[in-house]
Image (cartoon, rainbow, N blue to C red; front, side, top):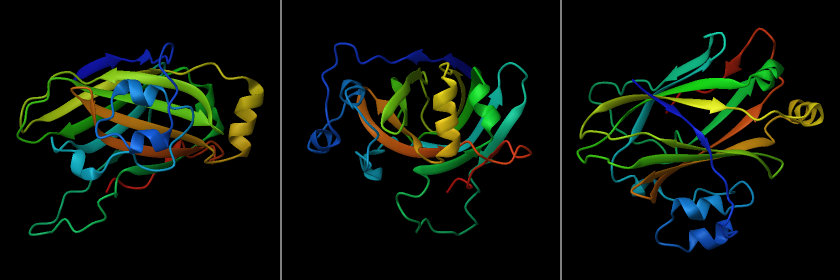
Amino acid sequence: MKVKQGCNSTAMGVPATTEEELLRNTIITPEHVLGLQKITENYICSPEENVHMIDFTRFKIRDMETGIVLFEIMKPPMPPGGRNDCDPNAGRFVRYQFTPAFLQLRKVGATVEFTVGERPINNFRMIERHYFRQQLLKSFDFEFGFCMPSSMNTCEHIYDFPALSNEIMREMILHPYETQSDSFYFVDNKLVMHNKADYSYNGPLSLPCTVPPMS
């Protein structure tokens, strides 16, 4: 399993851009999304742009200080003879419910398992931007490394969370799902996937996190 330490993506020197401008582009690059000033309202690429057939099948988060697994979800296998007639946007959005204690964590590891199609991938990168009420909290930048054709891959990304003020944490707890994120995936600096999520931090103390199954 590959372990990747994330770096903080900065928009210094990157021109500000809007979602509307990006939707008019035929190719969207990392520099484009780093210029976004707020969460997107729509997906800025279609499922058909995932020409490398990247498919995320498992996701796990653990607290790096204690090793406690906070949650783990897996994509259910397709039944024999089953057809893939689902919504093409299924699996692109996840709604998370965390407890207030999650906001106190400083470092977590996110393990992702994914398969790729018949093409090798040399430069696979994710930029993930987290917002609360359109205010950017942090932008993460991860490299997945080389992926062989028709392979199953596992990678753990290490998230260093920013220190938040008590006021912001209180507002995030009181206003569920106003914390949101965009996850942009690039192959050779071209956007091929875009996923979205929102977050609640007012879950029961006995329940670390709840998410819907992966589609």
